[in-house]
Length: 307
Image (cartoon, rainbow, N blue to C red):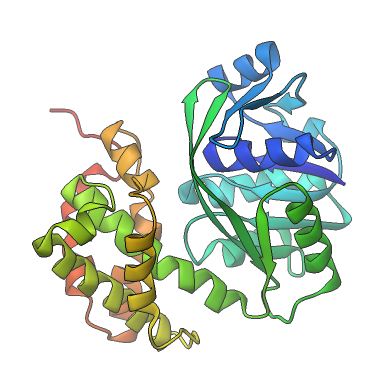
């Protein structure tokens, strides 16, 4: 299977390296020092299950030079989704698909508007991995999972084929019938965790160790679930408590939005807490917790302001 990784950072780089290690024909789209390091030294993966490297590695900063592929894994930041979808067009053959692995719930629709209907598969990535240095990606915990589904369900042959390839590469992949529920189930946890961690400058361990933070975080979870249901998404009745249990049962995680905030980078705010703020207004669902988080972080949305 020929696979292009659009956005070869922590998520795309890790999953792409696992696929390449398993014998798939993988081309990485990257830029700057990260691309230079990959070309010089290959792509290095630091993993608690065992370090490995892809060397030599196929990597470029020009997607149009790759030619048609079977699958594009779209792993860019949410604010780059539309622009990256336009760059994907030269990679698409008659049966090519794009798997969106962004954090939010709107990426499949954004991509479909650009490349046309019937080519997009929604995905939710459950992983903590970051670029440690140019050409080096660190997998921060033992979790590496992707859930994928068709925008209009049910599970198709192409989704089953992708799930089989991903599972063979060593990361758990589930094929699901309801893509909206798939994306929103992750989003309830993700939007709330990203917002609260960035607001408090704490990792997820603080959500269950500090009663004041836990109280507000639980309200953020409930608001996100309420907005999803108002949009017609079939979320489990106990989705908020499932999120709490997940945080209790897993090591603390520092969400990527907090990492970006600490490094002075632009934030995915408008596609995470900002989405709940916007959809809350649209559906008349009160979201005071997310409204407050959004307002507090909005001055940093384009990176740390000059002092």
